[in-house]
Amino acid sequence: MKLHTFLTTYLTINFASCNTIDSGNDYDFIIVGAGSAGSVIASRLSENLIWKILLLEAGDEGNLISSIPTAVSLLPFTKYNWGHFMEVQPNLAQSYNDNRMPWHKGRGLGGTSLINYMIYTRGNRFNYDQWAAQGNPGWSYADVLPYFIKSENCSVKNADYAFHGVDGYLGISEPFQTKITDVFLKGLHELGLPFIDYNSNKTLGASPIQANIFQGRRHTSADAFLKPVKHRFNLHIKTRAFARKVLIDEKTKHAFGVEYEVSGKIFKAMARKEVILSAGVINSPQLLMLSGIGPKQELGQLGISVLKDLQVGRNLQDNLAFLGLNFVTPEDVTLRFSKFVNLVSIYEVFESRTGPWVGAGGAQAIAYIKTDESEELGPVPDMELLLIGGSLSTDYGLILRTGMNIRDDVYNSLFAPTEGKNSFMIFLSHLTPKSKGYIKLRSADPHDYPLMYGNYFTDPGNKDINTFLAAVRYVQKLIQTETFKKFKITLIDNPVPGCTHHQYDSDDYWRCFLRSLIQTFNHQVGTAKMGPKNDPDAVVNHKLEVYGVKGLRVADCSVIPFALSAHTNAPAMMVGEKAADIIKNAWKDNLW
Ligand SMILES: Cc1cc2nc3c(=O)[nH]c(=O)nc-3n(C[C@H](O)[C@H](O)[C@H](O)COP(=O)(O)OP(=O)(O)OC[C@H]3O[C@@H](n4cnc5c(N)ncnc54)[C@H](O)[C@@H]3O)c2cc1C
Ligand SMILES: *[C@@H]1O[C@H](CO)[C@@H](O)[C@H](O)[C@H]1NC(C)=O
Ligand SMILES: *[C@@H]1O[C@H](CO)[C@@H](O)[C@H](O)[C@H]1NC(C)=O
Image 1 (cartoon, rainbow, N blue to C red):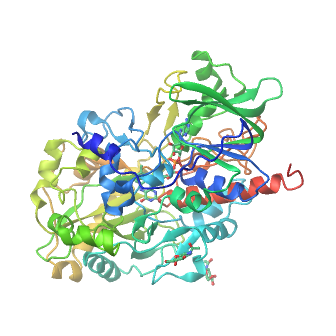
Image 2 (cartoon, rainbow, N blue to C red):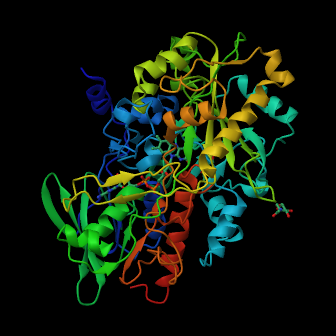
């Protein structure tokens, strides 16, 4: 049996039948997509029992494998991943087979929180204050912090509880750690970086990972927000229901329903009040465009009649990650294959729900730093260092690097040397990118994936790549700290194939390496940008309403106006919490 077939047919945990009685096709609200944001919105809107809510989700519920945190590396191969690839970009991603960089996106209850690495970060106060300052009242740090806190049931020991909630649906806890975390934090401390709670209002510093893991299991937004309320008779959750377009009255420009598909059959559902698109950063803009909302010329060329000319799909921004820093130490302080693939560990994850299988896919700590490339005056970080307790070689190159599509020769040079050894990695992730990509329709067929262009490292002035270079230099200083020296930590310095014509360790060598092994952190945002009316790129306003169309909102990562200094799951859930309040408020005098 193929790995893929095995995983997709393996035991389904009893999420219980979410589909309650089907009572006609009329709803008050229809939400498309049960992802990080959509699950929250469905949960919160259905608190009002007089509203009838339909939640459409293209995928299925999760299973046993997806619920085991460290099994995350298997998930790209399953039906829970849409399987997108970015279009090939010249002089980029040469370390990937056919230069193709995967853009994983989750499909199923929980959306991308069903396949992600469970790292819980919010983004810093500067992000939100800038978001508001761009003409979006209600989105400043002070405005959004209560929504992060509302969602959360935090049990992290050293957290700063002025910034955390304990009554919310979403479990936040500390994942499994190896000793390398202490080494990392101490080394950084030598360089002057303080220990902080990275989800507080402190913006430069390091802490162990906080993860959306609850009682030893992945806590997707669906597990957290839908499972406890699935009995509500007014909440109708349809899985395997693929939305094809929003139904909009051409004369009044009023959204009145959604056309969707189940097992090849087409259905219509009507929305008395609103349609809310939470289909994610690729599919929400795709649905808008299929419904006639988007760049006029592009839609016209595909024979789609244009209802509203807007810059849908543009302004795509992302946090890139560099995977090229692989370390080895003689000390037994990292994850090794034999440490988690053994009977004791497997017993632990099922019995006490602890041990190495309860990890955030190996992520153990985060440091927010400000590199020498930064021109900011204040404590604004521009790079994240993400400590991974193992390496791409920990599984002997079987699974992780296959999911990432990394070429054999690249793996053999950079990672194979640490197979069976104590190895770990420091991923670099750029927090303040300037480059912008876009997505556009491939065709008018809703089943055709849109074309996706990252346009990475294309900013004039090369600030993006030079910030990575500065972070590499920072890590080289970290290797020189007493702490790192004590553990005899060395960087694997085999040259990456394709860059051997540069002198090793020269700036040009690193720039070549960075271009080659750069990867998306899957934090794309901005394809249905929030902005004021006078912003030519704006698709929705600060109330998430699509410009020029009534009864239609977008609420997911697509509306986030620029790349945040964060992994984007918590921000998506925050958007969901806030969207629900905006909607409740809009209808409070008109409940029926
Ligand atoms: C491999 C990976 C690792 C990541 N790791 C982290 C991490 O550790 N921490 C973190 O914070 N973030 C992480 N992210 C990013 C984060 O998970 C996402 O940004 C976030 O979940 C996006 O939320 P969303 O609500 O915008 O969309 P999604 O959660 O993607 O939800 C969209 C939903 O809509 C459904 N849908 C789409 N089209 C249709 C349609 N036509 N009809 C019906 N349903 C449809 C989809 O199936 C999906 O369920 C990771 C992402 C990936 C891919
Ligand atoms: C919060 O988490 C704790 C365990 O960490 C659990 O006992 C409690 O029931 C949870 N609260 C909610 C509201 O889910
Ligand atoms: C950070 O939060 C603390 C505690 O709430 C507060 O006293 C402090 O003023 C805040 N700092 C900034 C810069 O907002």
